Length: 202
Image (cartoon, rainbow, N blue to C red):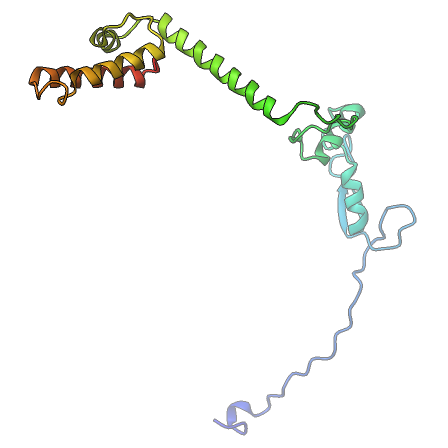
């Protein structure tokens, strides 16, 4: 199909004229001393439902920020709401800012003394934990483990370890010429020590 076809006869190409940017026409902005066109509506307030003021884009934002959308609130409550709205209506969460104080003086304690104090503290904590374990009622396996090692229920960790070592030496197969009864007692002593160790007695 060519441009001289019967279909294209009499059809003229449309030439667009350069459009001029026109300012929107309409009433002026009702903000004091503003000459721009008021194309944005803003409500007047309570008691004047359906009545609007006309502002430009810049002034309608300013008007909306200070507008009381809840007429039941007093001016004080409205001001508080606007302050809270600035932070997103939620309490801010973060670290407290403390007032700067005087810089602390350098410590006069030697570095080795802190380690000794911490070691004493940790030993005291361990002893307190062991005492608490002994105060509570023993479980069946724990009581049986003490009986197997031949110890009383209030034995210290050092006593438990030393008795365990004695049992190992006494019932070792090399010391008893491979006696099977001695092997069973060795296994029982090992199991008893494991139970006591797992439950924090030694």
